[in-house]
Amino acid sequence: MRIYYDHQLCSLQDAGGASRYHYELMRYLSGLPDVETELFLGMNSTVYPFKALASANVRVTSFGGPLRRGMLRYTTNELLGNSIAPFRGKFDVYHPSHHRIMPLVRARRIVVTHHDCIYERFPVFRHAKQVLRAKKVLFASADAIICISESSRRDLLNFYDVDIAKTRVIYHGVPQLPRCPASARALGEKLRREYLLYVSGRSVYKNFTGLLKAFRESGLYRSFDLLVLGGGPLTPEEVDLIAKLGLAGSIIGIPVASDGLLAEAYAGAKLFVYPSLWEGFGLPPLEAMAAGCPVLASRSSSIPEVCRDAPFYFDPADQSSFVCALLRAINDEEERQQAIQRGRELALEYTWEKCGAATLALYRDCQ
Image (tube, rainbow, N blue to C red; front, side, top):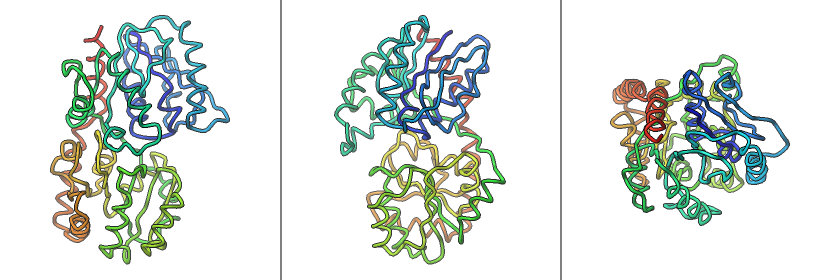
């Protein structure tokens, strides 16, 4: 079986849950003797070691360049990828990594992954209309659609005219983040006291503003810092809000995080907070649980489905609920220890081997 993956995600982002998902799929498939995989990354600066997967059965076309992540790099890679694709023969499965299909890739079947309906539920994003049009074409062209949770599938069926028979729910796995002494030292130089941890982008649906307000209203900023990991530098608007809330001395931002730094941050945090209003799956809470960190999460979308009874929960529509749950998750030591134990056990159930095997089974079913 020959499988093709494209550049799209890694043209638009250097790190993120969807990029990790495609890396873990390729890593699983790279160990199988009867599967050939090909990835055209083109110009990229991804943090994931795709190039290390290259072998007799895995072809990775990847090179550096001056273009940063974004549409210019995307357009350049799209032109390069389509110029090469006709010479690569016909694949059994083409699994595009984002919202569009490269037109010159030849494949017997197209399998796509539906992550979420963030653009549909939060139409404040630039280019939202273009994305929705592209997704409509993508789903109509797909022979099979992977949904990463039942919640994700419900959203797909709610917003698009898709036959449920084309869909299959396949959960993500939890990555094994390596502990790293060098990262621990680097993190230690940044830290001043115990901290709460936030890991993610900070788009409007991530509810980072709600977290800042709850952190202030709870009074926890007097005793703890809030470590904001990943998602790029704090924006001027975020810096202004932090100053207005009197939190300037309690926020530590690290714009980019390696897996080693993530592992150390999870392991050392007093609490991991996941305030998102909507998620298709949500890897960070499970990463935190695997590291033995208690989790506070919003009771919304896929989060209770995936995380079940392991976290502390709050109602994202009720700020007072957020503040009360935050205080409880910090101060109730008995419940904290129970949350840590439940989280460790739950995280073991999500593996990339299960995800990879189920995805390969779907590929074979499509042939």
